Structures are given as C-alpha cells and as structure tokens.
Length: 120
Image 1 (cartoon, rainbow, N blue to C red):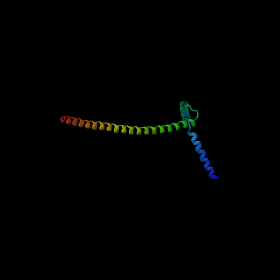
Image 2: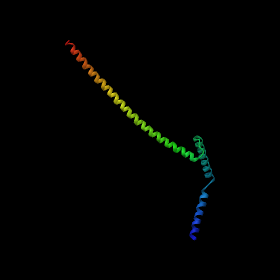
Image 3: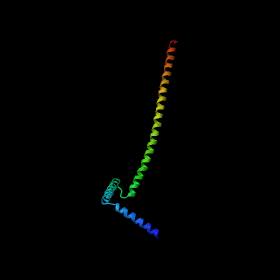
Image 4: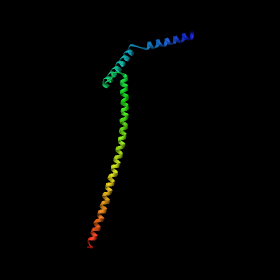
C-alpha cells in the first residue's frame, strides 16, 4: 500500500514537473509548427487531388512501384540497346571484311584476265 502511494506520488510529481516546464512561448512555438505542418499537408492534398492521409500514402506507394518498374524497364532497354549496338558493329565488320575480300578477289581476277590477254 505504501509502495503504491509512493509510486503514485512520484508519477504525480513527474506530471507536475512536465506541466511546469511548458511555457507560453513553447506552446506558441508548437502551435506554429502544427499550423505549418497542416498547411503543408493541405498543399500535398491539393496537389495530389486526394482527401485523406490514406490516399496520400497509397499515391506515394504506387509512385514508388511505378518508379521501380520504370527503372527496371530502363535497365532492360539499355541492355537491349547495348546488345543491338554490338550486333550492328559486328555486322559492319562483316560488311567491311566482305568488301575487302571482294576487292582482293576482284584484283586477282583482273590480273588473271590481263595475264590471259597476252596469250590470245
């Protein structure tokens, strides 16, 4: 019983101490902060076109999911582009090789034709 009274007295003293620490200026400061937060919240609601906190959270969550999806698609597209660029470079190399080999074959054919002309 005495222990309960002592604990009760300690709790009461703690409560009184907290209330004594609250001043008019600290209350005004807290009111200003609350008003500032409410104004920001109101702006967020207006911009997002929603009415409740739950809707705001849902919007942000869906935006995060959309962002993650777009980021993934962007990575996949970049990998696809890199692959296509590599394929294009390889195709260009094959074309150049074919041109070079064609020139060599053409030069050999011309030499053969010239060589046979003397025998006519």
